[in-house]
Image (cartoon, rainbow, N blue to C red):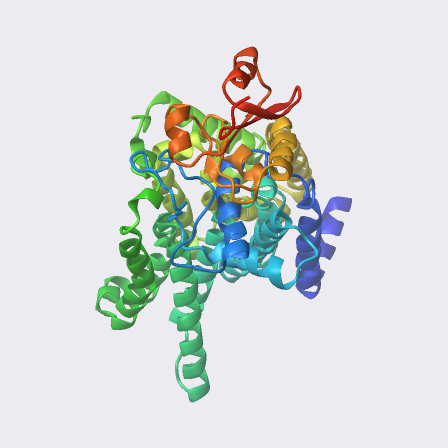
Length: 498
């Protein structure tokens, strides 16, 4: 009975304190994302983080040439075909890097890497706000707050929403585009003021949609809710609405221009076709085990979240069910089409977190305010509390190792290279193709022995750095001068004999 009274009190006052509650969620979410905030870029998925941050570092050192972004890796490993002596890096349009490098140069105080994390944290929390607004508009205030809560506090999302990756920014653009599109398309344009508001909402939708595409074309999957919104408003007559065609063309145009521009620099374009089904894993047993059992069931939902998630699928409002289920269908289509990428890299699941948070929010709202003819709050609220606690605990247990630095020798060795070699030296920082070690040196070069050493010296290699050296590594000192040697690293000058 006490639970019933307490929940009635919350429900009566929820609308009064909604902004305060949301602020507390965001403030606490910001604080938990500061865990190991100043750590080196050598944690989980540091390879992709290092590549992203090195583009920003080059903007700082050589200027903001957005049409010719460069990074540290000069090898043929990313493209699989061409050496990359200029270090071109043509993947996402460098919006994220402009924020990271720009804030570092104008504000300072933090390191470049810390500014990268701060950018990701800010946009992740902005995503939580958009998610709150979207769900509140369609399912109610309580579901909106709970969806925001789960998006902010899922341990999987906490980790990835403080990494130096462009994907969380893409999520913000996707959610912003959906929210502003919903407002725009449901405007009643009867006055000049409303017309001006409609124009503003159109351009906001356009900016967010185009931004999402420029970061990653996979954003296309997550525009399905926008199609549903248009269908709700116009039915199949949506194909006759020139405004929708104009929006679509203008949103996709910058991405198309960027992709055409990129083709001039094939050495800077990483291979990508393998992401779809390069190893033939789609619909194999391992596909379902990795994505639905390990990633969704264990890492994201911590097992116990499946209960809340399932209830959310059942109790979404009937009039908005197609809208909400479109998030889930978009996520499902994405992981099926981009099968190998999603299996191989868990950060590829970043875009599906809003969909999961939505149904967790709806399921939680039902457990807080269940249909009394079905079950009482005295039973559902304890179920919700226990489920959330166990979900967060088990999910944290599964992802906590992501923060670890598995090989601290690369940090020490990188600092030694930076201290002992000229700033313009080109380095072979062998780490089996992983550019994390190379990033620590603050030099351009190669992350593997892509060719024999004499050939790589002709290509411009000046120094060789190896971590945790073996006897065979040390034996290279008979051919090349050893600059420095410890148990953690050995550095050779490839231009000098011993």
